[in-house]
Image (cartoon, rainbow, N blue to C red; front, side, top):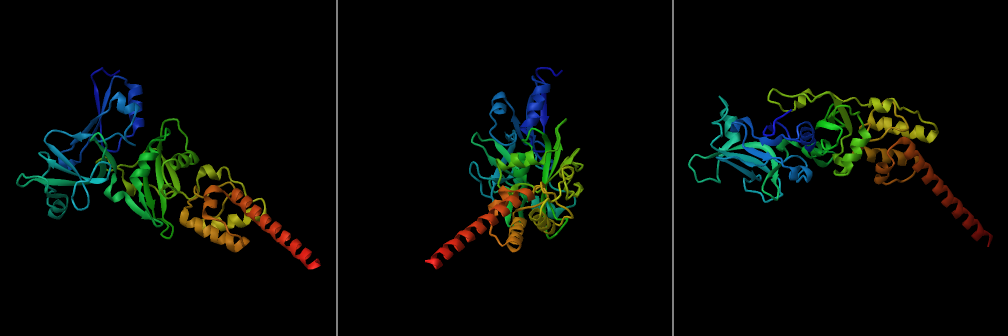
Length: 355
């Protein structure tokens, strides 16, 4: 067991509170520190000591990065290199004694990343542009949010990949996660989450989706969840996005529960889903969004339903009734209501004609 005065320093990726919980369970007397800093600043420049108070009442989605260490200056700046106020996202710029001179034999990249420090009166002072986005918490510590390049535009919506990852790793069954936009099918890019499970946990797409729905809007909910034994890493410990596998269109968990259409209405709806989603088969209990559906494809489904059944359904209907079987019930109920309305109108017309 660890001695009372031992310390654990964590770094490399955003630190989830679930990891701190594991550490405390295994070594109650060990104190954890979150440490942040890129290689270009001779590694660590920010540190945060986890206390019992911050652990039981977290102030951020992930463990904060903390405050600058001695002889280091850390700035959160906007696109005009102006400081941002508390709570507003800004890019992390680092200055101080630990800044590297630049990249060996790469003057262009050095000029891009190592810039003059306009916030210092010291001659020759420079800042390193990290590409990381954070915000100040009310206590003055920094909370990591995402990489600058992790904001993407998908189906007309601006998506913060880092925000999705930060929420997903809060799920008790998730040990680590990364989210990316896959364009394996150019006409239908998908938001995909790659998930590493906690020991003993089982894949549960429905539970993960429901968990994310508590915090995120529908456009930020991944279309597919891919379980992995571990995330592929680059030599410096970052997630290697290029090594992530191409996701399967059919979730094995759903395939095992396949139920074929049982009536003409379900068959027609399943055919629409197969055409829109580019699938060879769809079961009546398959979840539209689990099969790779998203809001843009949902509008195509509603258009096809309008052509096939001559009814109007709101977009929200597909977010509420998400399986072929559930949509079939909505369609048949709507058609029945229209028939009853027409019958009542015909009866009233006949009565007026008789009068």
